[in-house]
Image (tube, rainbow, N blue to C red; front, top):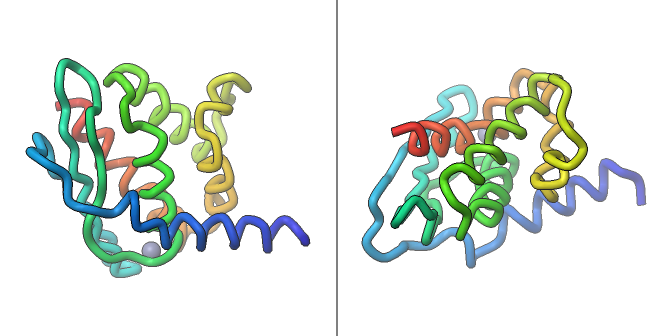
Length: 141
Ligand code: ZN
């Protein structure tokens, strides 16, 4: 199996994860992201309590990359503190912008590391970063 096939499989697996795309109870923040060039329309839904992301999910419809990227993000930051989640999001954007990233921080991204393949694909990078932008907006509120 070559790398492309492996990446494709991981993306398809995450894009079909039903446990990460659902309604949550008593959300405190909803941030809708829209990517007109592809048609992605995803809302991140979060319940923040005492500086912790108690619950997080997403709703809406998007392409496989955008859906998988959102699912990875949701899985990564659930239960994390605001500062931990900010660190994860900032590390992700540094990776996408080709900035130097500490190996230890990169490990925090887990399987979301594979989204790096989209960084040189102008049509796909917006799909991959849509929900990460939205989480950043929520965390900085
Ligand atoms: Zn897309």
